[in-house]
Amino acid sequence: MRAVFLAAVAVIGVVGGPLTALAQSDTPRRSPPRIIITPRPPAADPYPKPGAAFPGPGYVRSCVAWLEPEARPSGTVIVPRQSCHWVRGRA
Image: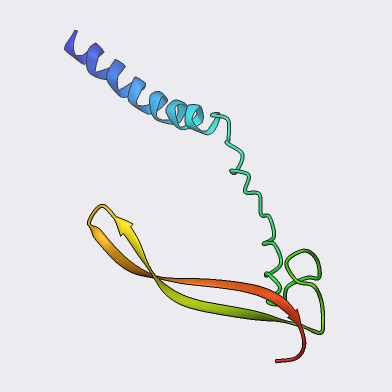
C-alpha cells in the first residue's frame, strides 16, 4: 500500500507540475494601465492685456503708499497701504 501511495504521489508530481504551469499561463493578461498625457497650458504673458485692468499704451500707473495704524486683537499695528491708478503719460 505504501508503494502505491508513493507511486501516486510521484505521478501527481510529474503530471501536476506541467498542469500547474499550464494553468498559470492560461490566466488572462492584464492590459497595461492607460496614462493620459495632457499638455501644459501656455505660460502666462508677463505683459497685461488691454482691457479694464490695463488701459493700453501711453498710460502709466501712479501709486501712493503710506503707513496706517490698524486695530487688531493683539493691539494697534502699523501696516503698509497702497493706492494706484492709471494716468496718461510716460514714466
